[in-house]
Length: 489
Image 1 (cartoon, rainbow, N blue to C red):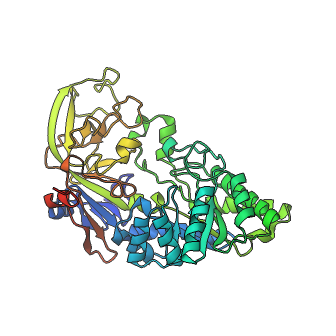
Image 2: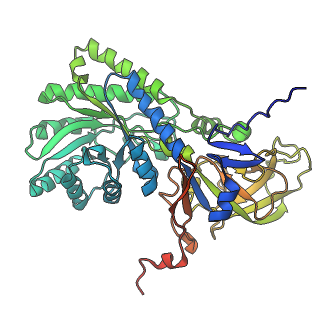
Image 3: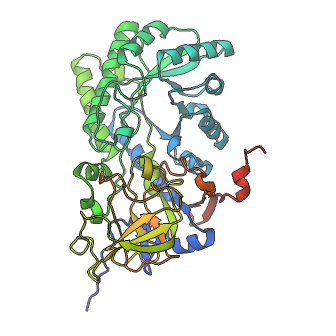
């Protein structure tokens, strides 16, 4: 008599997120053991997964016709141990502030590995970047170029500068993540950039070496990348025709998506557009190969292929490197029941009804993880799949209302505005009780980078599971004294 292994849950990732003895294991380490040892809420990151994600992006160099420079977006997660892991994986870095530049240099990134974005750089920040001699300062406006020249002249040093364009390329992502529209705050108009190259192409203290375009984050379609590539090339041609200047690099930004809906159990609870957004699965190599092929054809037909010779392509991935490499463990602290409040949902007939019981009330679970550590769940109504760490192999088919610990009515795991951008209920095993440990998946990006001490909440600890299996504490949990660190009284 033969026995077959049960089919793994759709959210599992082989050799990373797995179920053993009914419990979630991360890189072979029990999530329950981690939660008990380090307490919750607790962020857990996988060193191996981060390196795998970077290697996946680096493969694109094999299918394009130029060198590729991967610059991990530090804004997605700039914990020092994470930055070290990124550096060890062979990635360069994109920073957005003097603070991120300081951290980058502190952890050992070389100046030529660093690019500096941002819309509001101060003179002090520009001074730090110019003194360090970084690869490129991505200038956001004509005013900023003037300011950069002023600082460089004062320092008697030449600044490497790339110009950020905003060419009106729309994508099907969240409105707050679209950065290539005229309505966004980023970049300068292409004609402004062209005038800047006319004015400064042979400036004594500026080296105008590249152009930059970023279409936004979590982009579900491949076409905008091709459009962006062509836009960059068209500007390369105009700049060369006007100034005879051949740029050394073009920067396509980041934006490669992460599949937050690998498990489609609740996919039907989202509108179609949200389903597409959260389940996007673009392969960077395929996208870039197609885009590069299109640009090469345009270049050859225009007799301008020489402009692509000796040019380097820059990418700024953040989410696609770190999102699925991090999870958050949270403990159920409270449970309560209330009469059903939503007349539009009949839980006795719903697909999310437990087959074992007739739902008569809303069951609320209150956890220790709120939007103070998962801000995107409130600002963008971002979806992170929730599972039970202790009963990961059980059917997740019972509906619960989930909420965090904050004294704020918006601290919930659903959309209180009725826009259906998050599920009204989360599916977990039946009879979840206080002290059960739950897991939020795919929340490694824009979580710890944005967390704050609202309600006097101590910021959580973070651990990194090394490739060796060692569990390393990479951020200690705050104490109450840490709440007073910068207060004067």
